[in-house]
Length: 203
Image 1 (tube, rainbow, N blue to C red):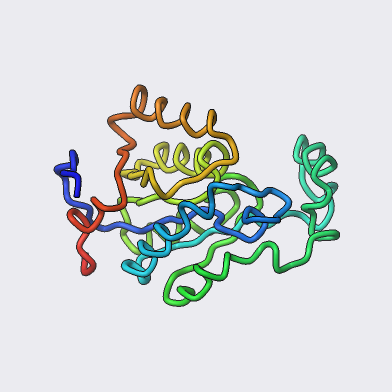
Image 2 (image 1 turned 135 degrees about the vertical axis):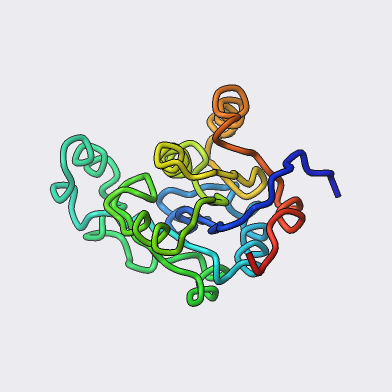
């Protein structure tokens, strides 16, 4: 096991797992091939910290016209992802993670960020959460938007490197470089094997 480079214990934390849904799994409209690789890691983290886990779901509009501005153009292109055409099961969590709810919490959102038009901030503040351990899909879209919003809100952010996935290798790699080079004071990169060393179950 690698020796962690982090020295500060993880306390008052929530595992925030972004958009691990069927629509991003194999055969989905937005298939993310890496998901199969990171899913066992996220299952292990969710299983260890089930009561401290929040799963988000990206809920698409019924029709493109239900969303404002350029979202309409986006969903005109991706009309197959609108709820008028998409089976509702595609927006559910993948089966391997669905079993953790409850006690894990499920929060829906209509846009990329986990904080966009969702009750996430209020939930975290009510629970006195100060740290987010982030996993999920996609590294360079919904995870990116969620992480930057979390930084703006003042949360300590730990991104689990081997538990985030993208459909773009270049996008994923660019984000890892960006975090290390520009956000090192606010975003910490961590391997899943390091989590138990710093985050005790009862914290």
